[in-house]
Amino acid sequence: MQLSRYLLLRLGKTTVAAWAIISCIFLLSRLTSGDALIRSVLDEAFTQPTITATERAQTEALLRHRFGLDMPLFYVSFSTPAGATSPTWMWHGTTNQYHRWLNSLLHGNLGHSYREDTAVTELLRRAMQYTLPLTMLAALLGVALTFELCIWLEYHPAWRSAMLSILYAVQAMPLFVIALVLLLLLANPDVLAWFPAYGLGSLGAMSPWEGGLGQYLYHMVLPLISLILVSVPGLVIQLSASMQLELHAGYVATARAKGATPRAVVRHHIFRNALLPVLPLLAELLPNLVAGSVVVEMIFALPGMGRLLAEAASTQDYPVLLGAVLLVSLARLFSQLLADVLYQWVDPRIRLSA
Image 1 (spheres, rainbow, N blue to C red):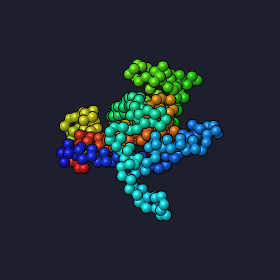
Image 2: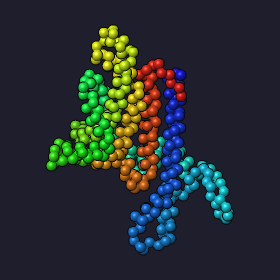
Image 3: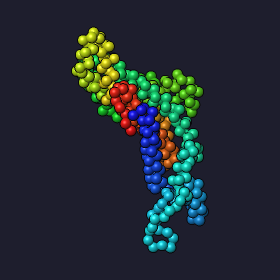
Image 4: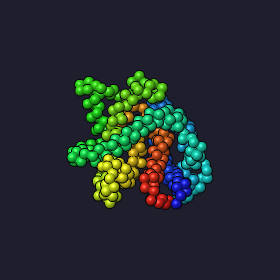
């Protein structure tokens, strides 16, 4: 199958999968959160006992209309009509919450935050200007460190056992433990106060490009090391094991018989073929780091996607949650597509089929 046709088919399937995921999350969130959201808003607004039941009911009706909760949830529902004794299926046409949300989504509108009354796209844009540089830099440095460490282990086999033992120990540690250990060791006045413990200092709410890239990177050192340490061990273990299997392949003996140096054999023959089993892990690296940024940004008190998700979840800000989940889902689905394309780039003999 031609690569262009394959990409079109996979993009279509990816779009359908993303729509199904976000639709399920939307319906589930509205089924479980609508009444709870209204009650929480009313409880915060009416703290005085002088509010009458009529005023509370009127305010609740206005809030339901504002949030779009006064319409049916989906195109059809199984409910009991007024005056009927048994439930039946009812068709609501396009006057429903899901159709309104889907129509807005197709126009690039993810709605407004319940908490800040700001467009969700604007909140996501602000968060991504911090999260994207952090995760992309962690992914690039993690991949580069993985490649160089695996090649170094092939040149120095005596260190292989000790290095793999260290990597297994680091891999067994959760991300929050790694971040806390770095925080206590390198940002603690009682030990070593080399880096800031939290926040962005004088940068405040400015983007990395407005407040100075050097100062931004200085505050990002510990979060960056945390994400690298949680991602590199698994990649090195898998890639190193794959390279060990390739050492006994016939083409390696042929290359050596032709006079290729050990360095050339490793870099130009073994390494490329050993990449094949690891490509899915490499493609999933960036989405995994975005998910890990939730922990890192909360521990180091950094603005970004992770902090936005945590605050939206704690305040039941479902439009923000849906927008963030949509971004993460698309990133994960497109990473799978990237893995398939990389397979053919590494080994042109592979034939893609959608």
